[in-house]
Length: 113
Length: 113
Image 1 (cartoon, each protein chain N blue to C red):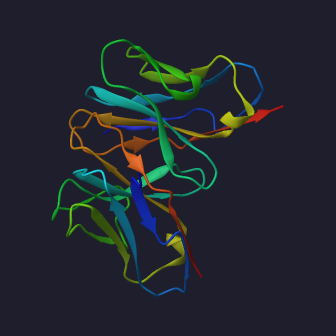
Image 2: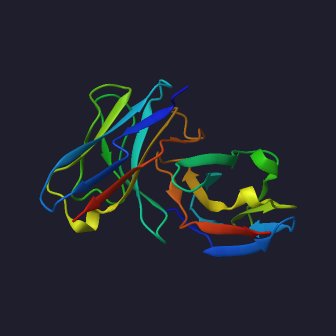
């Protein structure tokens, strides 16, 4: 069975500071990895995805994530956050042999001026 | 450019009432999903469909039924609503390849009194 752990439920940060949102996964087979963002009262939007190849993946809005197979992690980073990045971020994993996408419990990023 | 459309956006029900949530997608996607989102629990898969006329159970299927009579529509039914089903419900769709991201609707906020 596959699972996803987002270690931080909330991350407060000041504007223009760097941020890292942590995600660890568990799976007995190879996986596809995704980060989604949810703004208030909206659905989820895809930020970025790792399918194969280069372990550093760049997404929208200046976010990037690094796949680390040995540590089974897929942490999300941004070098300088904006107020508009305030949202909830979800990590998700899908094993090669399943149709189901498993989500973490989410991390609420709050950016202060 | 509608994408995934959910109706209704809000609904209040009394315990024991029934209702159907409608999801429609205009991207010709094969796969469709229903999730529920509860505070601190991320998104949990209720039911999903890998093609017209097919459905399968997800992580939390009890108390819900689904139908996929047309490729573009995926219906979620509550036969006898319970307060524990108070939640925000999201529909998503994707292409059939497992490395494809899911596209989400804006959600239906359902309260059961």
